[in-house]
Length: 377
Length: 260
Image (cartoon, rainbow over all chains, first blue to last red; front, side):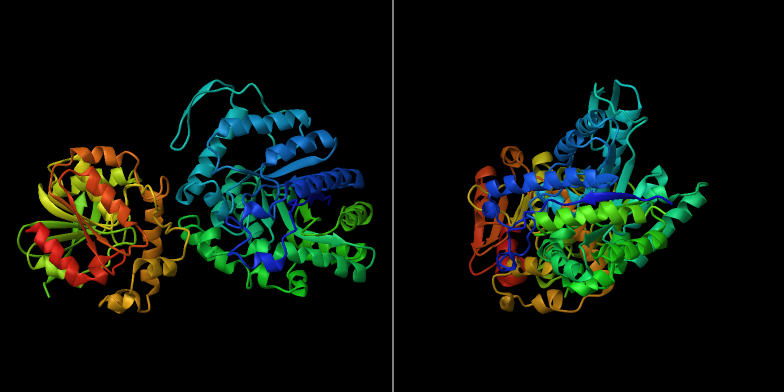
C-alpha cells in the first residue's frame, strides 16, 4: 500500500533562547516583536525555501505549509503566499496548505480565488486544508471565539460553492454576505481541490470531516488517540453507507534521520526547541472562552496524559511525537505508525527549531533515498 | 433578612430566572459580565425599601439564551420585553458593570422604561485615557484579583469567592464567561454610539464608582456624567470595581439616598 510522504517545516525564527523566552508568559501572542530581526528572517526564508525545493528533488511526494500569527515558532503568516512561491519553485509535488484559517477570514470569496489561483499556477497540485486556527489566532486576529466553528463552517460552504457552482450568485449568510460571487479565477481540479482538515481531538471535527468525506489529519496526537479518532471516522462513514480508505487519513509527526542512531539522537535534540516554549502559555491564550465546546474540553482532557512541553526527549520519542534515528530505525518506526493507523499520508515535520541547514538537508536526503521508498510496500 | 423567591419569567418563550424579594416600588438590578452572585447583603438592604427584581441575563446561569441575542443592544431590546411581560414601566434600576451598560442602552432606547437609573462601575463607554481591563485574556483568578481593592474589607468575600465551587457551579461560571464573550468581544465592552445616544436620556441618573477600580477607570464614570444631562458621580474611596460587595454600607447609603 503506497504512502504519500509530505515534507513540513513551520519555518521557525529560532533565535529565541530559553532564558529570554522564560521572561514572558508565552512565545505566542504577546512575546514582544522587538526581538524580531528582519535581516535574519530574510536569510532563514532563503534557506527554508531551498529546503522545500530540495525535498521535492529528494523524493517527497508533497510539501506541507501552515500559518500562525504573533509567534517566532512559525514565520509563515500566510499559506497562500508560501503556496504561490512553492507553486513556481516546484513542478511535481503536491502542495498541502494546512491550512487557511477560515474563521478569521472576513472574505471567503477572496480566499477561494487565491487558492484557485494557486491551483492554476501549480497546474492542479494544491491540497486545500482548512483550519479553525488555534485559540491564539482568535486573539491575534480579534475574531470572536464563540463563533469560531460557525464561521468555519459558513466560510467553508461559501468557498466550496464559489468553486463548484457557476457564478454569479448571491450569498446572504449569517456571517458573510455578498451581492455577486463570481471570481474569474477558478481551480484546475474539479469540482475543487481536495480538502483536508486537521484535528487534535474535537469530536465535532471528525463528524464534520466524515460528512464532507474530507481527509482528516491528526496532528501530534498520541497513537492510541489517533487510532480512536480514525476508528470513529471509519464507523461514522460506514453508518453513512461508505467505506473510508487510507486516503482519508493523515498523521503528522516530527521526524529526523541521520547516518547513525547516535548521530541522529544528537542532532535531533534541535526539535526540543519547538516542543518547549512555543507550546507554553496561559490557558486563555490557547482556549479563549467559547473556543471549545464542552465535548471539545472533554476530548482535550483525554488527548494526552502529559503536555508535550513537559516531556523529555525520550518521552517524546516513546509517545510517537518525534521519530529520531538512522534510516533503518526511522523506517521501522514509521512503518509501525502506517500499519497501526492505516493512513494514506504521513506529514513529516523534518525541519524543526534550530536544526541546521546541513542536518536538515542530510535528513531530507536520507528520507528521500531510503525511508520514503521503504514505506511504499 | 428579607425573604426572596426564585421565579421564572417567560419572555416570548425565553425563560428568565429571576430572584424577587422585598416590598415597595419595583427596582430592577442588572448584574455584570460575571453573572448573578445571588442575594447579597447590599441587595437585601435594597429589598427592605423596594421590590427587587434580580434576573440572570439571558444566556447566564439558569436563564435560556435565545439564538438571536448576541449584543448588548439585543439585550436592551430583550429587557424592554421583560419589563413589558411583568407589566413594569418607569421603574428604578441599578446596573452593575456590564449591567450598567445594558441599563444605559435601555434608557437610550426607551426613555420611559426607567424613572431613575444608577450605574455602578459601568462599562459601555470607551475611556480616552485609560483602558477597560481585558477580562477575557486573563484567568478567572486574575479577574478576581483585579476586582477588589482590598478583599479583606469585603464582608462577604469569603462566602462568595473564597469557597470551593461545585463542578456544576464551575460549568455555570464557564458558560457565563462564554456569554460575556459573545456579547462584548468586539468592540470590547463598549459601544461607540452610546455617548451620543445618551444625550436623550432625561431621567435622574447617578454613577457610583470605586476610586481604585482597576477594571473600569473612574474616567468612564466622568464620561457618563458628561453624556447624561443632570447626572452625578459618587466616588467611593479605597474601593475597587464592586462597591456593592467591597463597601456595602457606603454603597447602600448612596443607593438609598438616590433612589428615594
